[in-house]
Image 1 (cartoon, rainbow, N blue to C red):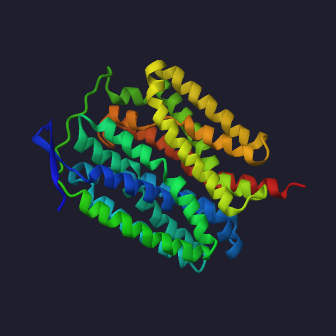
Image 2 (tube, helix red, strand yellow; image 1 turned 90 degrees about the horizontal axis):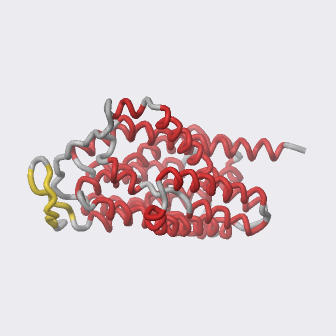
Image 3 (cartoon, one colour; image 1 turned 120 degrees about the vertical axis):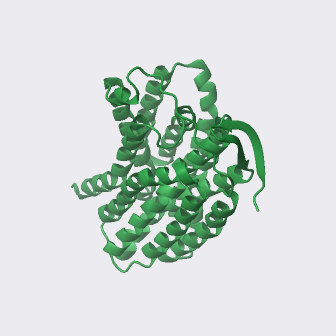
Amino acid sequence: MTELHPTGAVSGTGVRSRPRAALPALCATQITSWGILYYAFPVLNPQITDATGWPTGATTASFSAALLVSALAGIRVGWIIDRHGPRTVMTAGSLLGALSLLVGAAAPDLPVFAAGWLLSGAAMAATFYPPAFAALTRWYTPDHVRALTVVTLAGGLASTVFAPTTAALTDHLSWRATYTVLALLLAAITIPAHAIALKGPWPTALPAPDHAPGGVNAIARSRPFWMLACALTLSAFTVFAVVVGLVPLLLERGFTTSQAAWALGLGGAGQTLGRTLYSTLTRHTQTTTRTVTLIALGGATTAALAVVPGPSCDSGLIGRRCVRRRRSHRRGRRGQYGSSTARRCTRWSRTDGRTAIPTAAALRRTSCAKRP
C-alpha cells in the first residue's frame, strides 16, 4: 500500500495528504509514455512506409489524428481528474495505450492502423503531462512548482531513452514486433506505477483567484491574448516539425536509423538542459523580452537544419530544445487543470500547431521529393 505523507497544506476541506511515491512514479511514467507513444513513431515511420507501401502522408496523418483526439479527450479527462483524482484515469490510459500499440502493430491495412492511433490519442490525453500536472498541483500545493519542475526535467529525457531504444529494436525486429515489445514495456512500467503510486486521498480544489477586471473571459477575448496564442501555435509548429522530420531528414543525408535516433535523443538531453537553465533566465529577464527572444532563437536554430549540411544539423535541434519555454512554471501559476477559459484556449493553440505538424511535414517532404 502506498504510504501517505502529510504536507500541511490546507484545502477547503482540511489537511491534504499526498502519496509519497507519486512524484518518482510520474517521472518514470512520463519518460515511458512520451518515449513510446510519441517519440517511437518518428523513428519507426520510415520503416513502416517501406514495409507496407502506405503513403508517408497517410501514416503521419494518423499520428496527427491521434494528437487531435488527445486534445479533445483532454477536456473530459480534466473533468474526471478534477472530481475523482488521477489514479483511475491514468491507469486506464496506460492500458489503452498498450492496447492501441498492439492494434497498430497487427494492422493489416491503413484504416486499422489509423484506428490504433485514434485509440493512442485517447491514451495520450490520460497519460501525458496535463493529467500528471493536475495530480501534482493538487497534491503538492503550495510546493507544486518544484514537483512540476522535477517531472518536466525527467520527461525531457523521453526521446533520449526511447529513440535509441526503438532504433536498437529495429536492428533485430520488424516494425510490428518492435511496437509489440514497446507495448508490453509500456504496460509493464506505467500500469502498476499509476495503479499503485497514485493511490491516495484526493484533496478538494482551492478556488482559483481572478485578478483581472472583467474576469478571465475578458482576457480570452483580448488582442494581446490572441496574439500570444498565435505565437505559441507557430512556435509549437516549428518545435514539433523538427521532432517529426529529423529522422527522415538524417536518413536522406546518409545516416543510419540508429544514428538518426541518437540525434533525436540528444535533442531530449538538450531539452532537459534548457529547462534547467530556464530558472536562471527568469531571474534576469522580463517575461515579454524572454518570450520574444526564445521564440526568435527557436526559429533561427530550426532554420539551421536546412542551411547547415551534414552532422551539424543536429546542433539546430539541440539549440531548439535548449530554448523551449518550460511550461511547468506557467501551469503552476495558473492553478488547477482545465479551470479557466484562458488556459483551455492557450492549450488548444499549442495543440493546433502540434497536431498539424506531422502531416504538413510529410506532405512537404513528398512534394519536394517529386521536384526535378
